Amino acid sequence: MGLLFPLSYGTRGFIFIGDTTDNIQTKIMEFAPKFNWAQYNASQTREKLIFMRLLRELCDLVSNPSKRVDPKAIPMKDVVFGLALRVYSNYSLRRFMSDLKLAKEANYINREYHFNTMSDHMNHRHLKAILIELIEVSCLPLRQVEQYFAADATGFSCARFGRWFDVRTQKDSKKRIWRKCHAVCGVLTNVVTSVEITQGNVHDSTQFQDLIENTSKNFNIKELSADKAYSSRDNMGCVVQVGGIPYIPFKSNASGKSGGSLIWGQMYKKFQTQQEDFMKHYHKRSNIESVWAMIKARFGNNLRSKNETSQDNEILLKVLCHNLCVLVQELFMRNIDINFLACTKNQVVRTKG
Image (cartoon, rainbow, N blue to C red; front, side):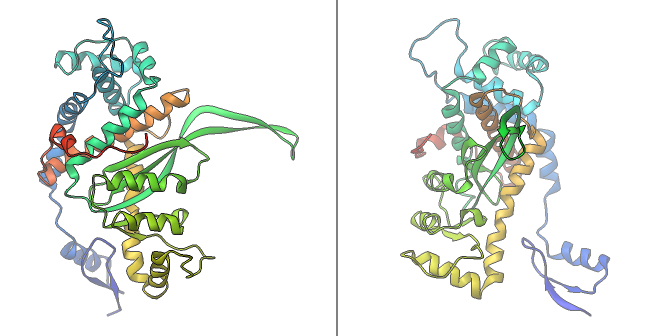
C-alpha cells in the first residue's frame, strides 16, 4: 500500500506513497476545499468595469496637495486615476490615450490631458505619499478577513545602468540599476497591507519593523511569516509587541540563547523540537511570493520610468492595481462590502511615509 504521507499545505487528508497518479489526484480532489469557479469566472470577466469604478471611488479621497487652486491644473484625483489605469492596461503613454478618452466619456475623469502631462505627474514629488496612502486604504475592506501575514521584498529592474572602474580587472564595468519593493501581505487573499520602496542594495530587514507596525494599526496580526533574512531578536520582538507570533526560520549559526528576548528562545526551541509544525506555519510565507508573481506577470517586471521618483511611483501604482484586482475577486468570492469612505473613518494612519 505504501507509506502514509500528508497532503501539501492548504489541503486536508493523506495519500500513500506508491499510489498511482490517478489515485493521488482523486484523493487530492476529495480532500481539497472546493473552489467556486462560477464566482471566479464572473469576477474575471467583469474585472475591468469594477476595477475602474473602485479606482474612481478610491481617487475621490485624494485632495490636491497645494491650497492654491489653478483653474487650468488637472485635479490630483484625475491624475492618479489616469496613471493607475495606464499601469493596469500595461500600455505605453501614447497608446493609452484612447483608454483615457474612453474614461472621459464614461465620466471617470473631468477632462483628457496630454501624455507628456501624465509623464510629468509621474515625477510629482507628492505622488509617492498619496499612492502609499491609497494602497493602505485599498486593503481595509479585508480587515476582518486577514489575520495571518507574510513579509518579503523583490526587485524591479529599470533601463538605467551603473558604471564603475573595476580595480581588480582594470576594466570598466556596468550593472543594471534596480529598485526594491518591501511589503507585507495577507496570506488568504494576497492583498498588500503595507509597502516601502528603496534602492536595490538595501537589506530586506531594514524595513521590516516599519511594515509590521503600519500593518498592525489596521489589522489584527496573529501570525507573521518571513524568511531567514528577517531572523533577528528585534524583528521577532516587534511581531510579539503587536500581538503576533513570528514564524521566521533560524540561520545555521543561530543559538537558543535568548539574549534578553524571550520569544527568541521559545521559537528556537519550537524550531528544533517541533520543526514539522513550525514549517507548516512558516510556509504561509509562500503567498508573498505569489503576490510578486501576480504583480510582475500582470503589470510587468521592468520599469518604464527613467528617474528614481517616477520609478518608485510606478512600482506603487503596480501594487495599487494589484490590490484593486484582489478586491474585485474577493467581491465575488467572499461577498465583501467595499466602502472606502467608511473604511477611512476608522483608519489609523502610518507613522512613516
